[in-house]
Length: 459
Picture 1: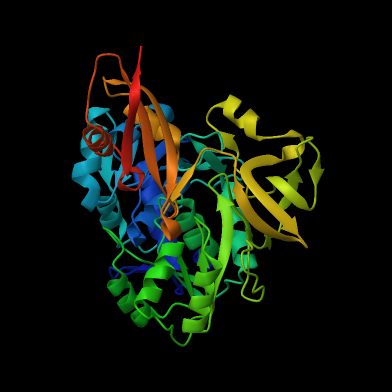
Picture 2: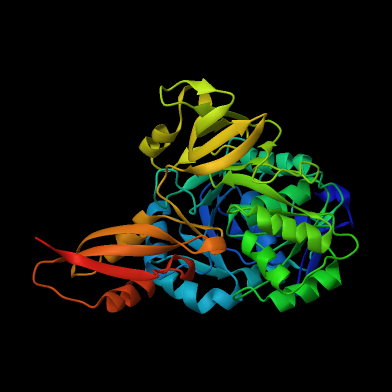
């Protein structure tokens, strides 16, 4: 990064910006302040320049960045902390009260990203004692994934993170372009596709710095001000912009969506309104990206061809693999994760030859891929993956609950909302709405139950 000198690398919509040389200088000094050798440092990043430098600083300190959602609730945080056993977490000032109180209860040291950034902002040369990342070393841990059907550590090495950036940059020809990144950096879509990929292509990432729900009117002002060449967002973002009669602007080349499927009708409406294409990226926390359409494809309903270096096959019911057809997709390539924390979970998803099962039903025709369904237990809401097992885990903590089943109910373009069917312990009684509210207070907003149905009692 330092070779690009004064070229702008990352900026955020709150007003901060850094050149390629400056971002490396600051990150290297943050590394010296962390001074953690080959351990785990949790970070709850926001879409800010400060958070980007802190993630890079963790890597340059020789540590693994455990990515925590800033909106995480107590039960989820405790589960993550117990599994990963990190001793330090970095948070932005705006999240200090909520996250640091959770950390202190678990004897986890809490450091503000703002203080690290401020202390090294005036440094003019890199700190030379930084750790030189090794390709095989663990780089990042995510908690959104889980082909195994529950939240767990998804571990990526420096090699797979960099490969993700390079393949994305090549697939979408990102070189020297500007990208507006709306997905959160706490999600692989935001961090690896929205930051790592542009940095590998000498491009400019513009981070939409939001601390609450998406404000589409504000986003319109940001688009008018920065005029990025590429817009990155989940399908709902484009639907909201279309509702406001967005017509694009000179310089907008195309937009990338991911996290969930976008309807052909929405793509056509966007094309008619802006004269540009929305391209669909496909991947998962365990491997991203796997494939994607490009502006020249103009295929309705496809998730594109595999990105460079990624191989795909269809796993047939008899256990054999084929190049085309329909069945569970298996993949291998440099973007695939190292594995899960639990070796047994890792063994469940990897086949011989390095092939990873995705849990998704895909049809391949003429080299193009089409999403047809899922086998894994997962609900998608506004692009967020929700694992029913995680919600069931929370509900089973209620003293009246004996058994729980969580499933998804369609919300159209928004995806699905989680619904719970509950069996109470014999002799206990609670109103469904009261149980729903009890559970929702203990979960992040996107996981919250739409409805609870009390089915009956069991011993």
